[in-house]
Length: 186
Image 1: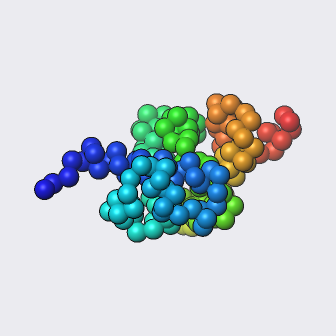
Image 2: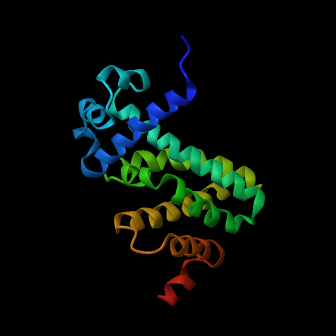
Image 3: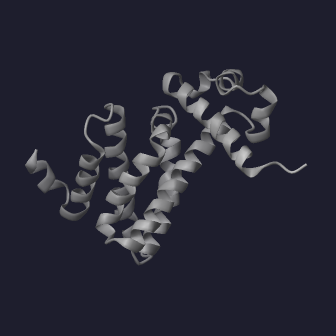
């Protein structure tokens, strides 16, 4: 019997949602499959139809977020100037995937996500911006992405104390004007 794709996706999303709720309150290493399934309302065997373990589920959350970032950036690369693309992508992503943010910015797991995130984005951005493969451009992109990630992570860890539009504008200004003029405005 073939599974219904909509039902399969809905079940997977229910497991992800349950995990995200638990991960906001507990470190991932303290979350059990039993807790996820209790919150999701499924039996334990259902979990293993979708994920090997809790860390596989965390990887799925990270992959989903990276995929959404890339998808949103591709839309904006084609529709806007490069310096505007991140602002548009960030706004859209904040609306679509805010529930994943708190999970991936935990101190213990964030470095893993950051490495995967930049590894996925660097080649795509280099290609879309038609940058030479001389290595220097990759250093600059790495610096830029690290700055973006640092700003967003600080914002998330500070309880989203500024509107997302303000964060997006700050990142846009850093891209177009540089850091020194921004620091002089503070």
